Amino acid sequence: MLFALCVNLLLHRVSPEFTPLTAAAGGVLLGVYLLRGLLDALLPLAQAAQGLGLSAHMELLLKALAIALVCNSTSALCRDCGESALADKAELAGKVAILSLCIPLLVQLLELF
Image (cartoon, rainbow, N blue to C red; front, side, top):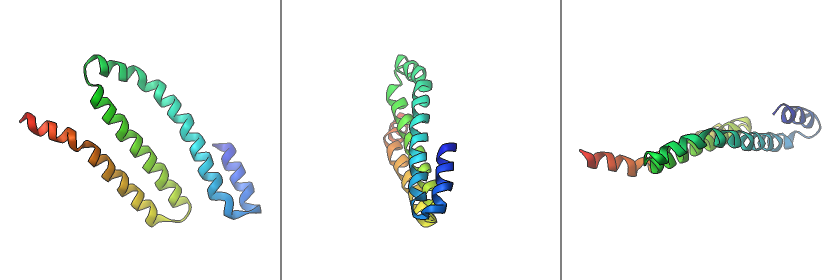
């Protein structure tokens, strides 16, 4: 990420219109690196959930986590580009997506009572 910052600062002096692209590229590379580490850390948890019969719930949790991370990164990138209204809409879209993802689980919980 430090390399992306240096490139971004140098490029900003020469051609400022490309700085959002370098910031986005740095964010994508960092995201891929972090996801690889996160998957390695979550693998034992997923295996334990499968052993307990909770693999569907674990899948739901991982999908919600992925939506939250993508929307947060998108929102931050929009704010970096000066588009705060678009950033707010990206955050709202993530919240709605997570809520719609969780509705079947909420229905299952309500049916228990």
